[in-house]
Amino acid sequence: MKNILVDTDILINFLRGSVRARYFLSSLINESALYCSVITAAEIFAGMKEHEKEKTSDLLDSLNIIDVTREIAEKAGGYKKGVKSHSLELDDCFIAATAFTNNALLATGNGRHYLMNDIEKLIVST
Image (cartoon, rainbow, N blue to C red; front, side, top):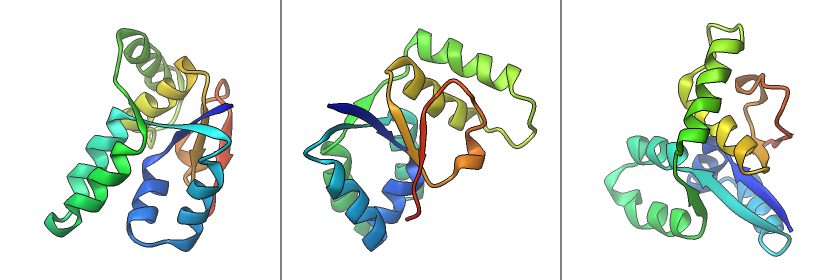
């Protein structure tokens, strides 16, 4: 069974009714362990409207949410310091570090946010 860390954009597209996002996530359920970073959960809650609360909670409850550890924080800091890009956001560094430390494939629709060469990425069109 493959560990897959799902990025924020895929989950937001799922919550907004994207058929592609729904198909992608449902295609993984029986073959993979699905994870998200606690950073992703925070990003989703930050943009959530009140009427979306139940659906959002149901989705997040269906995933394994990985907390930030010191190991993840150190790796994220290393990414931020080492990747030469002004557009690299610290939250993306945390998500990438979570994938790295948990030996997970990072599924994202935003490949340009993840310039790190030491993580495996799956670019998904949702």
